[in-house]
Amino acid sequence: MPIEFLGIGGTHDGSETTQRSGPSFDKQYTLRLARAHQEYGWDRVLFAYGSGSPDPAQVAAYVASRVEDLEILLAHRPNLSTPTFALKTFATLDQISDGRLTVHFITGGSDHEQQREGDFLTKDERYSRTREYIQIVKKGWTSRTPFDHDGEHYRFTDFVADVFPVQSPRPLVSFGGSSPAAYRAGGAEADIYCLWGEPLAETAEQIESVRRAAREAGREDVPRIQVAFRPIIAPTEELAWEKAHRTVAAIKGRQNGSGASGRGNHPRRDPENTGSQRLIAIAERGELFDRALWTPTAAATGGAGNSNALVGTPETVAQALLDYHDLGVDILSARGYALLDDAIDFGRHVIPIVREEVAKRDAERKRRETARVPEPRPAGLSGN
Image 1 (cartoon, rainbow, N blue to C red):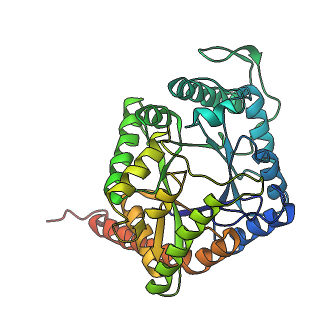
Image 2 (image 1 turned 180 degrees about the horizontal axis):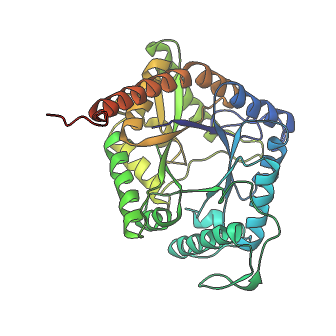
Image 3 (image 1 turned 30 degrees about the horizontal axis):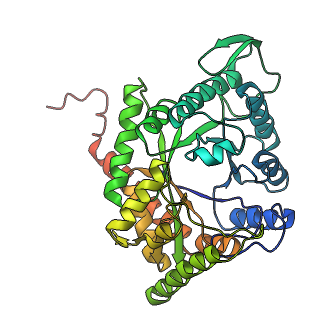
């Protein structure tokens, strides 16, 4: 099974541990970070979405026009933009990037965050809207003749685009979530299903839930699985754990201080989304799971997003990632706390180990499969 690595296309140097040193969109830093991912073996980077953040589509276009051979994962939230407008934006970006685009659709797990942009639908209504939105985008990407739509959330007549993606038949669709409603929507529509890093047993259960939802939706294929972590690596185990504890202390220090906006970076308490609730529940059960999964980083942030860490030497973290690969995970998402330095260190020290081991396993699997296939008999021999 091939393996891919997803990094972060950040627009500034701030994180949960460090206040940013410049504007929200620092163009030079954005390019440095993207080029570091390209140079050190990453496959793609995520351009994330936030209600007050720089527009990720325009940032992605800026990077794609200046950094070659780095794929783009564009986060998009179906709340303010109609799908007919969005699919043209996506197609144009796929043209700019020469076919390097994947779109990650975010349903939204926080009513407060959604309402900042005037979106007052309930969570279940948002999942229904996202599924309908994706269906329209897919059709608009591939239909060369006008079509009508009369659905629960969108209605239009005689639409046809005049710009289409480079990729045939269309770019991939990425989706995430840990609730039954998320499994149903993503299982039906996603090419890639994204999970936050949980212990191996829970991750295996979630993968099966996604696959079951895909089968129930009538699909013959199943989504590829992506899992996200916050790696904390160092040359020795002792140094890695010292770094991990410093990281949690820095997170808590940021929460007690002020960010660039003058507001403290406070953790969310009692989050509404199932994914964050799961991370908090796991953290309450213990700090360390399996080979290297460490939960205090998630606990310190209130389960905010991708927040469980993998702690250890590059070899330890690589083996932990391979454990997830053995479950069927073929896209590994990783983001450190010092975005640029950690992207370089992870790319230099962890990615090569994982790729080499996956290549060995694939070669051995192919050898075993070949050995099981009987050689064809030469023509004219009876076999007696």
